[in-house]
Length: 383
Image 1: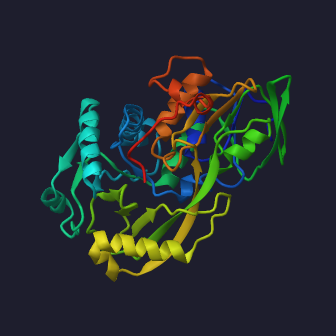
Image 2: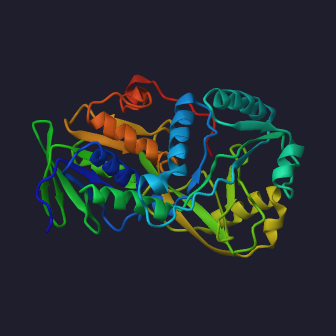
Image 3: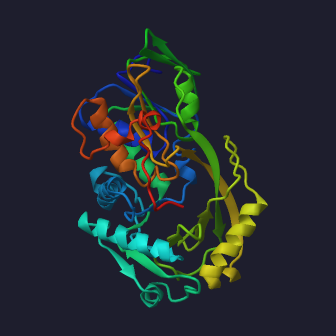
């Protein structure tokens, strides 16, 4: 039977939404509903590269990523999952191609090490010890962290969802939110294709649709959704341990446990709407970029490509917390391609914010008001 009342309604059945639900339920909130327009992971979560790295250039992102990576190491036990989230800690090898980037990497590693992240600055010879077929022509240096890795986004999300349901959370899939009821500046309920739910708290974890959900209560979030594509090759025997990544060369590539290579890049001029089609331009540019750095990949056949939505904020950092305009309306969005890897931190921090607790990590600077105040956060380490 479809619930008609709830203490909390979470919009979005990706990993962020179910992680928030689990953490709220774990803290004793008894009446939580998650609404997903299609199936769990049907949005950005199920279309992402699913990499997890701690090698960031700001303390805040390092701390959130470390928190999340530590959780993933024990997630199967913590969430009592019957399956396997397939956490492969093969490391991230991040390449620099300019002297300026090399100098930034020095600062990054110093910061990361001070926070307990075991990253290292490598020479090109040391990088080739990790990936022997790496073409170092045009490169300057690299960094490496063995604790970074890759997960299965479907199993990881399901693990959270199953754990949340055991704690009493109701998850409604194939249910669309058609409106949000607000009276006198306060949340009163959610309208869906299966009926209305009375509630005083709504959490917008809708990923690529977050700005559309916010408009339902008259809130204009400074977000837009942008198509990002991934190319997948045929499966071969394992030859690449770490994720290979470069910010300046605009690429990331990893070999999944089943043997296929997954790779992606950003492209200027990508449509800023909700389309998730694939295009030839990406395929051509991706092939040129990756085969220069990893030459053996030129012999592989590509099988397919897909696209998902990056929900982008002006500074490429997420928005966490309540909005001033409507009491009871919370946002966890704008992850700009990093929502999956930060999900464990998102779940804990949003639960703490909603319950009025001190947050485990300092995230006041991630409130939506930072954009009006001109307090944007510069992160040097993003593709």
